[in-house]
Length: 400
Image (cartoon, rainbow, N blue to C red; front, side, top):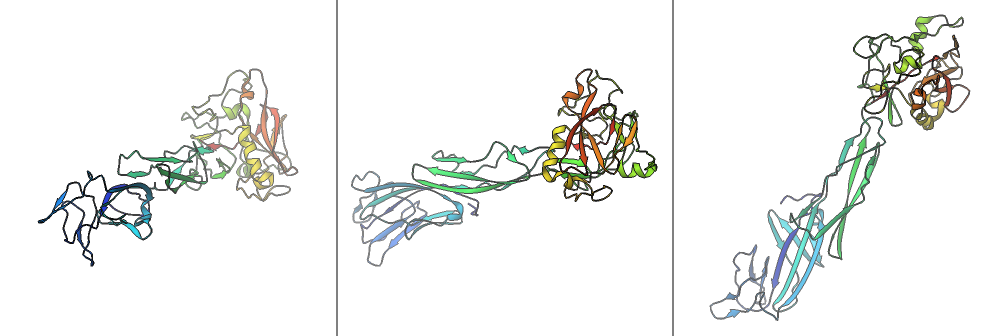
């Protein structure tokens, strides 16, 4: 048996130590041979006598059938790392290769001591990667090994939760008990990692525009506002309302597009005909709407927008440039003051930005209004505002 710090072995053994004869003898089938003490008494180590042993001159009366033998019974459960194990003061159980040696105290002439030693292999630490937008993640834990295999005397329990928090390390405590007195325990680390959201995750839209990704909270967001003019549906379907900010103060549409992306109506964002308040957007198997987002990405909900507000506030979400009052952008979200297209006019560039959301209220028949996330230089929190579905705002996407 290989010994390491994570193993617990269960071993059963019996030992008979006696002081009965002046002759030395060797017991057949034992893991360790007998011999003489200096004072002439004999000893044996490893197993007890199963049959009477006979010398040339007399019988040594010892064995299970002898009613006068002292018979002590005990059981212990230990971690593999604790072997050699001190069973009683100054008496140890040790492992040498595949052989287990037992050295236990005697209780006098013809003493018999029966001991069962259980040991377990503590489970290895576990690392798992969660799915996108998951707060918790289920894990099938590696189980401890109990030796001898098949032993049912040792109870095993742990304090593991049903699902483990993402982005954290959870310590699972395993407790092993045999009988009502011998208990040992060990710890297992369970680490749940966030899925990738870095330079390896660079979505492109149907026009070939490349976007970067940034993790804010539990979600992986596009770091730039969308600027596609076609849906990523494999058909090259044009997006009806995909506007570039243009006003007398900011007439450079090329610069505005490169900086701020495009502004989309809610209808265009969720991919239904303009001014159609009856048709419902296509909801994917996860319950979200892809809309004009790249494949594998979705539109945020109002709850998604609110969740990033509580991380660092608007100041931590705003970019450190272009705003009337720049943010500190500690989240890396890099929100830019892209303005809005409202009542036929472009307005609020450099001072405000608005993000499209999808929720169930927005698809109620004959409802013309929807919710947008509003960030401004003058308020420390994200505001959830209602605006007309025909108004055009920026779009950020979340990884599925």
